[in-house]
Length: 102
Image 1 (cartoon, rainbow, N blue to C red):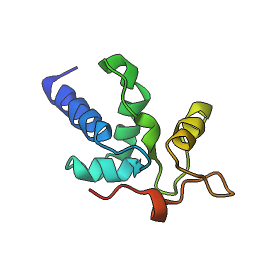
Image 2 (cartoon, helix red, strand yellow):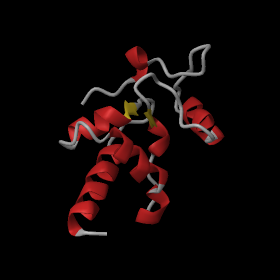
Image 3 (cartoon, rainbow, N blue to C red):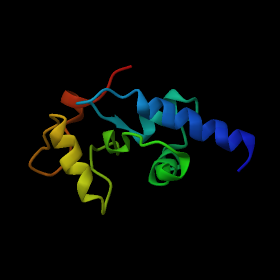
Image 4 (cartoon, one colour):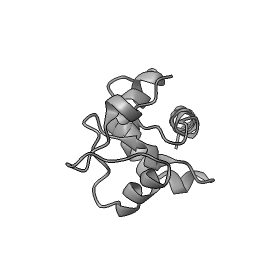
């Protein structure tokens, strides 16, 4: 991984680490906050491999722009619920209520 790539990974994970318990952010929001507004998918890729980068990060606090949880990751629902984040009837997070405002 190049230095630029490692800096990008570090920026994404540092931002995710700063999302408060009981709040969520979107992949696009993280991308915008690190100055890469067109790289929401890259943020998702980094988070899907976060265990490769050391300590545990609260990746469960990141959802898509519609509030949908990551497909195939059942624990995400439970982790968010444990932090007080309720899901709507359709299984999505209510971004108006729980989205982190930096």
